[in-house]
Amino acid sequence: MQSPSRCIMAAVTEKAASRTAILVCQGRAVADDRLAPGYFHDPIAIRLLREDERAAVRRAREEAPPTGWRERMEYELLTATSAVLATRTVAIDEELRAAGNRQVVLLGAGLDGRAWRLRDAGRPATEIHLFEVDHPASQSDKRARARDLEPVIADLTYVPVEFGRDDPAVELAAAGHRDDIATSWVWEGVLPYLTRPQVDSTLTAVRARSAAGSRVIATYPTPNRFAVLGRAGMRVFSRLSGGRDPLADEPHLSAWSPQQMRETVSRHGFEVTSDMEMIEVARRLGIEFRQSRAYGLGRMVVADLPG
Image 1 (cartoon, rainbow, N blue to C red):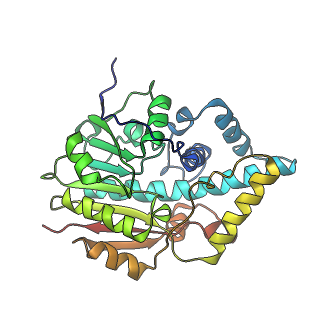
Image 2: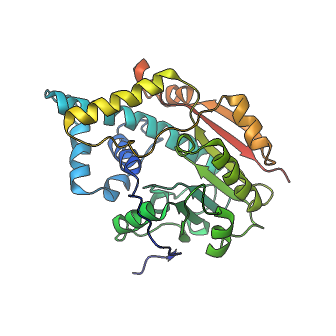
């Protein structure tokens, strides 16, 4: 059966597909049916990974940590990542259900699996029109990985955009996105890699394509010196293990306080309805963190466009 996807094509640039997206997908695969039972379930994540990437997931899902120091460092990295991903996935999906909009746009989609698992978004999955916006190279890689998967939603449209250069509003309009229907915008794990002007320009595009009742759901980092130390530790881990730092080509460029984030989204006409600390969500879900792992959780803002 032909997949119900419409692909809006663009030339793949020289930039490599995102390695961060692979780490994020591995984190969801490690967490599947292990963390937040009854809340988190993502069987699609493992299917979007290649065999060598799956092998790392299998090692991280073992009850006993490996004894080799390189394997132990990989185990700890993926275990920590799985806790972060389970937490924010549940929080985002809860807000999607609460909004109940039939248009959903994933900004910086990466290897997100919602097109193949989102059966409850406040309305039947067969009414959901989902648009994945991402860098052309990452999107090309994603499409190759997902070619054997069948979306559960009504329609999946790939929209290649290079943030900070292309205008997402123009590309979304060309892809069939409707600005007269409320949209839920998911901005998960992307803001650290954008400058503040890039965030502002993207929100300008979001506002231009949003009807009343639209919702922005965005995770964001707060200023934190421990996050800098964590990234330095990842570089050391990668060097010692003979691997490549997955964040080497994607440096953190920005962080916000809750007040700065409120002011940012308010400038574009959205009203903040909640701004939650993700460690509190993790505690509600029963996901345990060592304190060193909690530093990378950050916050999530939810903002709605009033009628």
